[in-house]
Length: 266
Image (cartoon, rainbow, N blue to C red):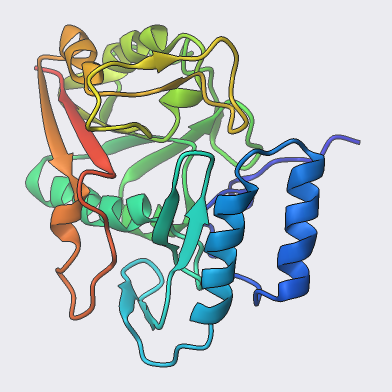
């Protein structure tokens, strides 16, 4: 029987992390090797660091989503790198979520926003949008308002003041079609806030022959900006790191790691 996928299976869903044990690390490594993952060394390094970080007592970081201080954020890894201090152990938010929360507030306070469409929504943000006409959408998740294919959106043109699309486009085979559709359903003077994983010190986008282990069709580079400008009247680039120190403790963002693209339709 196929497992039903919901937003609570994804990051930033208020999932509290389980305590890390050496036995648990060993089991995960064996499972990864069995499944053919080639970054088990990076995984081992990050998990051993996480294991010892659990011994820390004094709060070093603050999570602006669950409103809690923490002695550590969890490291995570992939085949390219180890990303230090990424995951909040209390709510499972990543760096990008903590930065986006501040950017979302800035947009809501600075613009006339009524109707919002959120693709692949994260539960940690729901309370922020409770006073708006807020619609959630996804192609696969069951607990959303609309089942939509972002490459062919079944919705009338010029409908939304704000569209949120966080780490979605890399999973889309024909991202150029998705961008055309997002522009179509955006109202005049509306904003699309887009984030994608990428290497922001590299110009070109790298396309894969088939989706990688994370279901990504490509790894973005700065060429994305010119593509966005082909579809939108104006594109602003925001390094979410600027919000790192707005609280008494850092929310631990990384410079030039999570960029938000604000795409305007005039």
